[in-house]
Amino acid sequence: GAVVSQHPSRVICKSGTSVKIECRSLDFQATTMFWYRQFPKQSLMLMATSNEGSKATYEQGVEKDKFLINHASLTLSTLTVTSAHPEDSSFYICSASPAGGLAYEQYFGPGTRLTVT
Amino acid sequence: AQSVTQLGSHVSVSEGALVLLRCNYSSSVPPYLFWYVQYPNQGLQLLLKYTTGATLVKGINGFEAEFKKSETSFHLTKPSAHMSDAAEYFCAVRRGGSQGNLIFGKGTKLSVKP
Image (tube, rainbow over all chains, first blue to last red; front, side, top):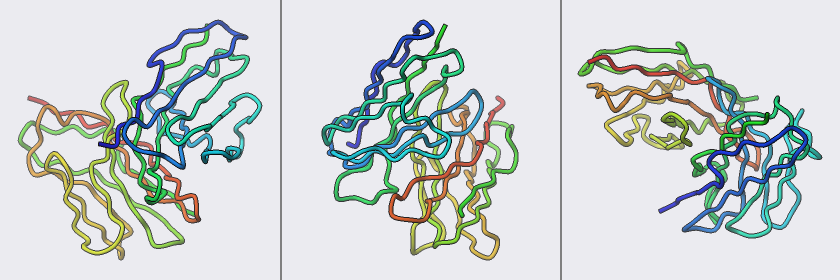
């Protein structure tokens, strides 16, 4: 139980294009989903917290117009990297907290490797 | 504010030897502490967590950790390392406040020598 999927697992795009990453909770409903970014050999940095049906809360320094987050249902959140540039290349990981559970109970997706050329 | 410090970015042990990965935390609220493991190009898997109650916490794959408030530590141990334990390990603390976000340490890469 408590499986989170991400799609795609890898994506290569050209500079200036937009990329959408999906995060799905497969066997539970998630009122809260989190998006992290991980640089090579570094820790996870929280980008934003999204609650179903409301606007995402972005961490300081994260551009909300560049990293668009939508949490339209209890099982799906999307991260869109708009006008991607090479510096946006990174490993993006989402996590989800079960509805009715504790916010710190997070189940992580397998991650999406984004490469911008 | 909450923070996590993992001592040693890289730990190498022989197969069968004791594994000890160190984590110290600071927290302005009662700490909820976590250890996660990450295999290459994968997401994080929860090994164990401490919220309240017993300070010695047992997790999956034979790992355990002990919460020591006086030392603000939550070190991860395993009596006998297996080759399959080679991975990156992250300690995390709950961020105070209603969101309950996690703050991660920088990670410790564990290598296991045959």
